Image 1 (cartoon, rainbow, N blue to C red):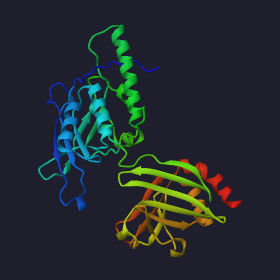
Image 2 (image 1 turned 90 degrees about the vertical axis):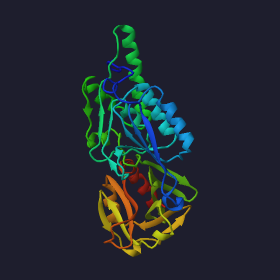
Image 3 (image 1 turned 120 degrees about the vertical axis):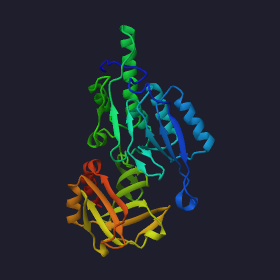
Length: 341
């Protein structure tokens, strides 16, 4: 059963602040280089009408989906914050915590109390260096069994919302841990653990799929750069690993290939790597797995596949890190199915 906590529709830390306002910054031109995504700066208290105002702002300026929203708020109305969060998700906005100055550089900001819930609406969530994310127990006005019942209902709604937004419902326990007059400031490690901040990468999904030619093991994760996939395939008893990621004709010349296991870069010989191709707008590259690589992969927590123009190059294309927890559980069975082919 959920713990009945003191909850209110308004954070006590927000009553003195101005209501949230929005300022839009369109991208530079040409769109072919810089894209069409705007950056929106939201500052102030989350009041009852914030979602309605924001919806009007998005419509008035024809803000495209995939734009960015930068939050800086002391909190406000809890129900309105969840309504705002769902509107943020509806428009597929990437969310940051911060502020900007006249140079348009991202500076530290804060997202406290009810703002912490609105922030979860971003599918991809970032926090600027030295910015603050804080939660606390919300207070309620009045006493009595009816108010306790309402607090219980609101508690359940908050937990359901946190889960709906893809964060860990354990975040709710951090809200309970601080009194209504205190603020529990969560460090980056906890923000990552509770999936509050995801730095533009969602949890991967691993599965064994079937096609007429046989089975394959697939891991895919949605990122701010697009979909990334790692696929284990089998051809006449020989195991292959294919990486699929964002690329273009300009990156096809990057041939210095590395398998990345638990952040360790393992250089591959050219004979192990196929020539990269662009298929359906994504770059595809396949490597042949020997027993040594397969053994390393089977013990891995994360895996990736990188291509560089040279091993000393500062940039790469590919997949830096994909959580392999789910894949590791499926790999032994897939390997056995390959050996009997």
